[in-house]
Amino acid sequence: MPPINLGLAQSDEVIALDRLQLDRIEREGTRIRCGAMVTLTQLERALDAAYIRRAVQAVGGPAVRASATVGGNLFAKTPYGDIGVLLLALDARVSLVGPDGDRSLALEDFYRLREAGPRCIVLDVSFELSDEPRIVFRKMARKRLNSASIVTVAVYLETDRDRVSAVRIALGGVASTPIRATAAEQFLEGKHLDPSVIEEASSRGVSEARPENDAYASSWYRTRMIPVQLRRALTEFLTTR
Amino acid sequence: MPEMSMPELEHIWFDLNGRRRDALVSPLQSLAEVLRESMGCRGVRLGCQQGGCGSCSVLIDNELKLACLVPIFRAQGRSIQTIEGLARGEELHPIQQAFADGYATQCGYCTAGMIMATKALLDSNPDPTTEEVLVALSGNVCRCTGYGLIVQAVLDAARTQARREEKEVAAV
Image 1 (cartoon, each protein chain N blue to C red):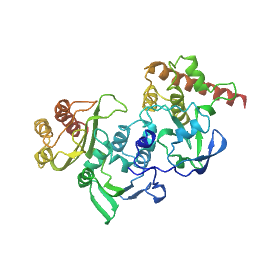
Image 2: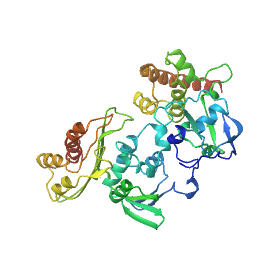
Image 3: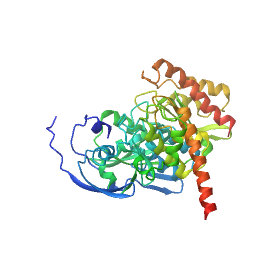
Image 4: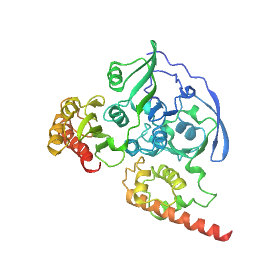
């Protein structure tokens, strides 16, 4: 609506997808298939998990959350799009339909496609609803409520006999799309999680980041906040779990 | 850029503050524009027109929405509440009364949106904590920055409503 309201729309036609039944959440065990037009309020109510609540509450105010959709959030420009950051840590897959038919791809690949200017419609996002102790979501912003991201961090971490056996770190606000912090992930694989390992992994969190200057923070500041926020996120796995 | 044609008008109806209303609308209109221009609801303010300020807050089927972000076809058959529907004749709604008594308005531009956001909160949570009020109003911007008195007015309104309900129960 904003481009229409502000007279900037390039067309006088609106195509409503309302009747395509894209507003459903399907659940098979722990596997979730979330329609692209599911609102953030709907998502929060349907999936009773603290990390989902935290990510949803990090976006806008109540009225925005009642209208904003999961699919729409995947197209939000940096420094917005925090739901995508959580979904990236959850290893989500995206189903698309376009001129070449249906396909499904990893969210990370979807973001690459998005930057290239896709000619497709997102149908749904699917992911594993993980156990709460395995996920941490943190957002740093200028205000506690309803503000764009300076750095958003979502971490999925699994351990086996005290060693990190699987880890996915997603960062938001620090590149043109949400990204995975691959260098930090690789460093953590197989390690025993302790403060010095966390410190080293956190400093590697800047490797893939290409933060920009905007009204909320400078690129310089964001780069310095990545290790701080990542360290705090990883430390939550030591203290509360 | 392709030349823009005049979009065809379509008939739509919805329930506005308890009364059925019909209108001819263009699919490119927002609910906010139709409420203001065709229904005389000037309490639905246009602020940023992109979902950032909360001044056009209304309730659709009892859920808080920003009317500037609602394409008009989505209002078809819905129940819509605006600030115009709150007072009973000359008697202000307890939320409006609390805002007036508590000096919770400065220029007044954000007030209608603040009151609708408050209504959405108190309908689902009649006894909110200060933190819950802050969350509920976090999408509404007051550029006079009168937030302290606004939050206090919401807490006062909750107390007045609770007292009124006690009285009604006692009367029964």
